[in-house]
Image (cartoon, rainbow, N blue to C red; front, side, top):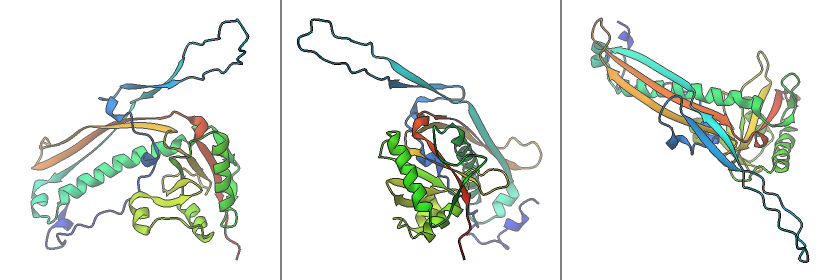
Length: 284
């Protein structure tokens, strides 16, 4: 039987749940458009006011004022990605297993789908309009002696791009976090925050997060460290259906399945930055 090891004579009522990676990238996106979607294939039109020209004024001039028509710039957020997960439990196993096994399984299914979305958002580093330092083929060496310098450079690049101060963020890999700790940067957080949400703390006006989903170049420690503000990337997600049924024809089994649709778009690439960071061992 598939779940023999979960029978009560072996397992206690306290289920051993998986220790999953923190889901971070959704936290740094704007989700204000979610209420406008209804399903796969929807398109959310995001309007933006265009530039308004400023002209010289002469109080003695009899010429008409130069008046422009107000333009708008429109971006499209396509709900064009769909993910599902499904599992079944033998009803006899379910009846004999202590603890809230079904709830734990559904939680794990939800995390698995959410992690797929998190990984996809992390992959958008190629759309960043700001390169802080390095490239995909030649990274910048980072250790505890220079990590503060490069966070400062990230801040400078965002200041030069007029990135709003409020809601700024950086997502780093675990090895980058170690460099921050070794440099003795004071981050206002605690371990439970890091384990639960990936949030490390604030430094130089940035909310700093750690994530295992930061994209690394294949076979290297070269990380695409993204930064921006909560307006650089838009996302919208909808759980279309989560259903429990007994449709499997053989035996007595409960089927659980869930379908999620979503869309993600870099809407302000000029306020999204990437630092190509290479792990540099500390001097001994």
